[in-house]
Length: 169
Image 1: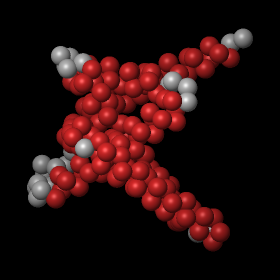
Image 2: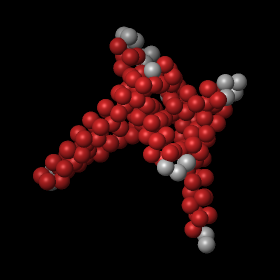
Image 3: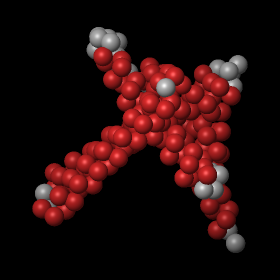
C-alpha cells in the first residue's frame, strides 16, 4: 500500500531537487544561462535542429567508441564514452536551465530572477510529468532545444572575439 506514496514522494523530492539544480546553475553561471535563454527565445527552431543533430551525432559517437572499447577491452575507450556522455549531460543541463528561464520570464515577468527560475522550473517539472505527452513530447523538445541553444550561444559568444577573462562563465 505504501508503493504509490513512495513513488509520489520520489517525484516530489525529484522535482524540488530539479528546482534547486536550476537555481544553482543560474546562480553560478548566469552569463552562460542567459546566452542559452536568449538563443532559445530568439531562434527556437534553429536551436531544436542543432540540438537534435548534436544529440544524435554525439550519441552515435559515444555508442561507437563504447562498442569498440568493449570489443577491444581498452579501458580508455570506455572512459572516453563516459566523457562524451558527461559532456552531453552538461550541455542538456545548461540548456534546460535556459529553457527554465524562458518559461519563467514569460509566465512570471514581474517576479525576480530567482523567483522566475523557481517557478519556471516547477512549472516545467509538472508539465513534463504529464503521462506520454510530457514524457515523450515536451521533455525531449525542451532538452534538445536547450542543448541546441546552449551550443549556439556558446559558439556565438566565442565568435564575437570576446576576451577569455570576460567569457569565463
